[in-house]
Amino acid sequence: DVKVTQSSRYLVKRTGEKVFLECVQDMDHENMFWYRQDPGLGLRLIYFSYDVKMKEKGDIPEGYSVSREKKERFSLILESASTNQTSMYLCASNVQGALRPSNYGYTFGSGTRLTVV
Amino acid sequence: GNSVTQMEGPVTLSEEAFLTINCTYTATGYPSLFWYVQYPGEGLQLLLKATKADDKGSNKGFEATYRKETTSFHLEKGSVQVSDSAVYFCALTIMKTSYDKVIFGPGTSLSVIP
Image 1 (cartoon, each protein chain N blue to C red):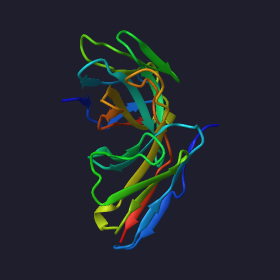
Image 2: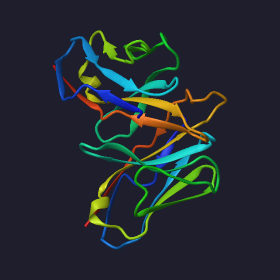
Image 3: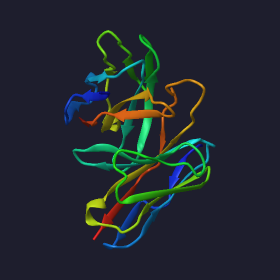
Image 4: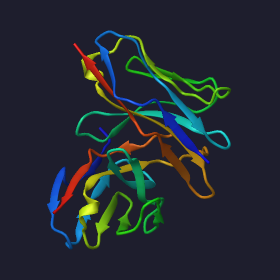
C-alpha cells in the first residue's frame, strides 16, 4: 500500500524552538508539498519541491524553510516557532506525468497537529 | 484569477438521503478537476477526478461530471451513510510555466445522522 508518512501525529513545542516536520513517501514521486490547514482558511501551500534539492515558495512561506536531500523525504523547518504557527500540517506528493496539467491527484499524509505554546 | 467555490456547510443529512455538494470554478485553460475527502483527524484522500469536459468521475458511490459550459463539478451520491461524514474538498489543477498548481476549495463539512 503506497503511502505518505508524517513522522508525528501530534507535537507540542515551545515558542522560539526550531521544529522539524518530516515527511517520507514510498511512491518515487517527483513532487512533494507542505500545506497548513486552519479553520476558515482552508489549505494553504507553504513550500513545494519538484526535484531533489529543488524548492519553491508557496503562498505563505514566511517563517518556514524546507529541505529535500533525497527524493523520498521532504522536511519542513520552523526556524523559530511562534504561536501563530499552531496548525495542522499536511504533506502531500504526486507524480508529474507527461500530461499538463497533471491529471494525477495528490497523496496526502495523515497530518501533524502542531501546538506552539 | 483561478478559484474554486463550494457550497457552504455544514450540511446535515439523514442516512440514505441524496447528497449534492456544489462546486464551481474559475480557471484559464483546461484544468483537471478533483474531489478529496477528509475524515476526522486524517489527511485528505483523493475521492474522484475528471480531466476533460463531460468526463464523469466516480468512486465509492460518489459521482461528479465535468461541466465546462457551467464551470461546475458537483459531487453527488444517491444514498449517504453515517460513514460518509467528513469534509469534502473540490480542487482543480492548472498549468503554470514549470509546475502544476492545485487550488482547493474551502471544503464542505457533511454530517450524516442515523
